[in-house]
Length: 594
View 1 (tube, rainbow, N blue to C red):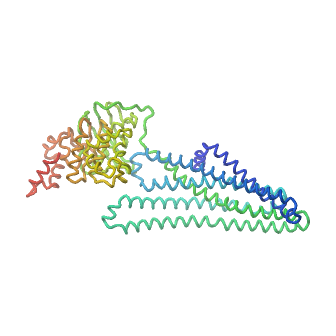
View 2 (cartoon, helix red, strand yellow):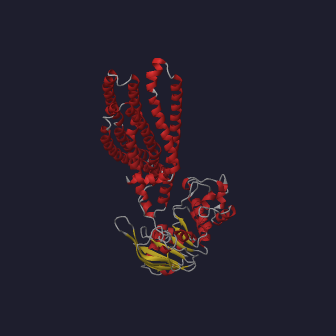
View 3 (cartoon, rainbow, N blue to C red):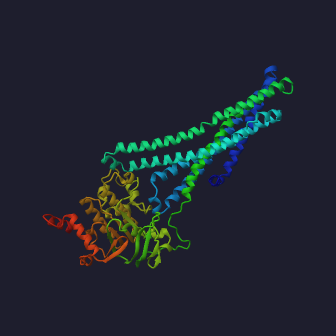
């Protein structure tokens, strides 16, 4: 009931359309009753004596015209209301999901979220546009037919409606069952969407490992699960029509038994009795539709509940009511006793007691083994997550006291997994500065060493690069990401393993682009290769979420038993720079790195 009331709140703003649809439905109901009313004069006057033929013909045509007009406008307006409700609901849901924290997305799949936005919202649209419209329109038609029955013979009308109370209980029971099995069906569809999205996004890995058959089999399992769930819904819904037909037969049998005696006694004319039977038969269509209204509403409520479950989730990083904008960064960033624990039910700490200060213009390198907490640490600065202990301040202001827009406007990010959009090169570079001119976009591309390959693309800067930029190489995608950060021109920069998984030539070009990007900026650089952070002003070494060492490259290497020295030794071994004939070539490679 709560979900239903919340849906009504979305529809309530369209009062004018609802009123117009209501008027059209009244026309439809009145015209339907008029068609049934004309049966009596046809049987009693027109057919036996050819009386009032013109009147009946004209009235019949007008009634059918009014019925058609009422049906058209009520359907059109109700569909308009449904589409408007869905437009707002889908927009609200998308905005709400987009504003959730990184932890929210880590715990849910893309397929699941897309299923809620598309399939569940679509189910609600059908309920608002079709089900509610059918309920109101057919109810008014039934009122008109019932009015005729009671007007001519109240006793016969009561006899015909003796079966009506028998409808209520099974409809309620079936409605509950429909909601349950519909939820199973929607969950099955959600899982199937997830399997398909995962296979499509990872199509290269699927092909590389020859796993097409395995993924197809996995999809078949999900599709069969959806099939079974849908058949359960169908099985429940298929009970209603034969049940309603049986009850209609009971009503007509009662009418025939009673009406025959009434005609024989002269209390009822043949025309009136024919009107009764015809009205009963005409009532079957609306009753059949109404019998499915509850089932359809239950299906919509199951979808609405799933939508509102997400709308009621609030994991987003909240902005304080008195949050102030951050002036242009100019002094220092301080991490004071910072702690962070993931809200995953286990309470595991990713960071504990992290403290250090970064002066404006410094390059800070963060190194450590996988799982040490490097990415988590830099994700706290733009508040993708909030600290669970301690504080982070910029120029003496706690980041939690700043507006999110002003904080993130001063931070540029380049990550290992470059996220580009299925749009043109120009729009991807200008993603953070949509008002940028073509000259500014080209200047950023030149600085990022991307202009050379861009002009060789089929349409140059207007070339569409595909989903996630899949039509470009890894190095090209990375240089576009650097151009995007250059154009944003933020004073703070986060580089999260921006050169990993690149070939030597691509890495050289990306490193040159990064050198341009790092100039006159305060930067946080995460890198597995220690040679890429040798020029850092400060190197922070993390182990198990704690700072174990802090200093410059040469100073840290001077501690042979230190954590940084051990990491450096391991890298030399991995590169072949220690031992045997590989030493010279490894040293040369080391020296070539920037």
